[in-house]
Length: 224
Image (cartoon, rainbow, N blue to C red):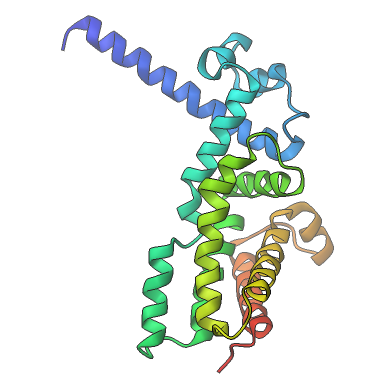
């Protein structure tokens, strides 16, 4: 490799590092303050770069927000069980290898641990909550890449657990209620103050998971 090629690769590497740092900083700031509450200047200061760099990589704040939403979609598998995973678990249920309560517990353990156990996913979850409450012009990215496939997975799971005699309308309402119950725990500051914890320790996260999964099973009425 020539010296010129090495320099070009080094420059490209630094550029990608800067881009990823902006996405991470942007996710945190947009999660905490919303799109309108974040200025280009704040982004530059927090990411420790000059103001022009944001425009160079993303064309401006909206371009960065779009990149953050696409990054959110790309991390969906870390939070929501994919449809193939769900169908595999349903097949095990039909073979008698799992109970209905096991299926609910498996799904929501992954979901809850995903949104409260990883700091970066916490910012992603807060952005999701903001977009659900007040959809932006880029909401369609989340709808197509995250919400539709995730709710398809959940709907198939609830159909297997609740039975096809339960209406689709009821399954959707139950699914939304369960998702909302878990997303509430993304707001760490308010919750730990109310319950008297200092922080979300691994032990406390496991307590949340155990209690919510047990209550989700009771809510869906699938305890054997």
